[in-house]
Length: 113
Figure (cartoon, rainbow, N blue to C red):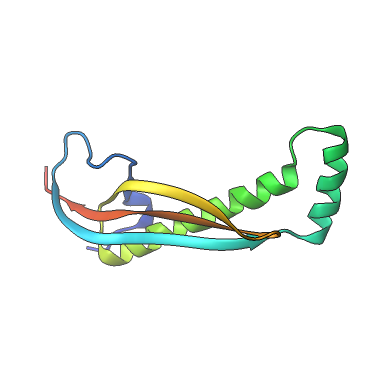
C-alpha cells in the first residue's frame, strides 16, 4: 500500500496518544533556502519607515516553511511512514539576504489498531 503525504500524521510529541509505534524508520528532513528579492527589499525599507508588518518577507518565509514541510513529508512517504513524531522546525540565516528553513522528525509506522 502506498502512503499519501496527506495521510501522514505529524506531531511535535514523542508519541501519539492512543497509538503504539511499531517501527521507527529513521530521521526525515526537508529544507529550503530562500533569498530576498531586491524589489522586496525596497518595499520593506519603505515599510520600515512607517512601521507595521513587512508582508513581502512574511510571504517569503511562509512559502519557505510550506516547501520545507512538504519535502519532509515526501521523504516520510517514500519510507512508507504513517506518521512523523518529534517534528521540529529551525531557521537560520545563511547570509544577509538568504535564510534556510528546516523541518525534521522521526518517521514511524504505527501498530494496527
